[in-house]
Length: 354
Ligand SMILES: Cc1cc2nc3c(=O)[nH]c(=O)nc-3n(C[C@H](O)[C@H](O)[C@H](O)COP(=O)(O)OP(=O)(O)OC[C@H]3O[C@@H](n4cnc5c(N)ncnc54)[C@H](O)[C@@H]3O)c2cc1C
Image (tube, rainbow, N blue to C red; front, side, top):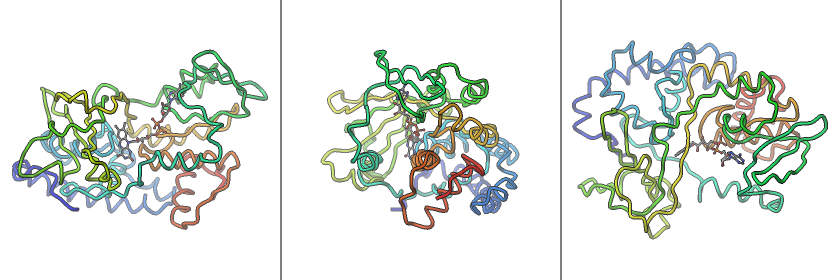
């Protein structure tokens, strides 16, 4: 399923820069071995953890066209990370180990998406899970935690785990400590660009060209307006997630929609915010979380405590459950090593290893 992602005109025009970038990337990947070692010490020695990708691109003299026509669309499309050039160069290069800059990379995906994992994981205790019941406030006492929902109803628990975004946690926490307030308010979110999405089956918004995007491509990206990184992006989900092929309709997700989408074919509209993984976040804020974890019966997981991707966020929840005493139920040795590595990033020496 390897396919050229870059429009051939742009490729011809920017070929020298693509080659230059590939050379830079090779160097970043060489240093990346330190991060792949799963040693926190070796990882800390990678100098590109402390330099943003924007700085590397500036030093390399790469143009705005290369950044906004080639590099950024790859990231907004696959990882929905805005401010991508603020990311540490090491993390940026790590993402590109999964997504080649010139060809579409087949993705390993979960059959029926993440929803199935959560459904099966909670099969034995579904009656204990409240859905559609937003939390308004969390009050922590010496011996328990009182959670108040939006209707003012309360429930009492032993501990609380926040799995929502950091700014949402801060709004819910009653009397946060100084460290909690500083840490949670230091996490940056981008909610101005690429923050609306429509899930639909209206294929008429894709151009009718020889490429036959509906059958062959993973995505379609259109830049519009004055801003070079204003994109409408349509993720052609059924081409990348084989299970979605079973549908008799196209499975499309359009971000930042400006094209007219047939209302009758819309399944859902959604708003979201992206976490900004800048150098400060990765090198300072993530390691600081261990100093609030477990304090005052309160735990945190999710993108801001590790890395923004479905799999790593899922792992943050598992690691936190393990800290609270849960078993590690999986057998795969490689998965276990990564679990322990991510767990150490979150909890340091206090991690209850798998
Ligand atoms: C459009 C888009 C596309 C993406 N595509 C990919 C992809 O292809 N692959 C990939 O790996 N990652 C992708 N990601 C990233 C991935 O979805 C995130 O990294 C991951 O979902 C973050 O997990 P989380 O648990 O931190 O937060 P979330 O998944 O955002 O979960 C937080 C939850 O908290 C809930 N919440 C908030 N406030 C309250 C409250 N007061 N009371 C109760 N509940 C509350 C929210 O409703 C939400 O369900 C994408 C993200 C976006 C936005």
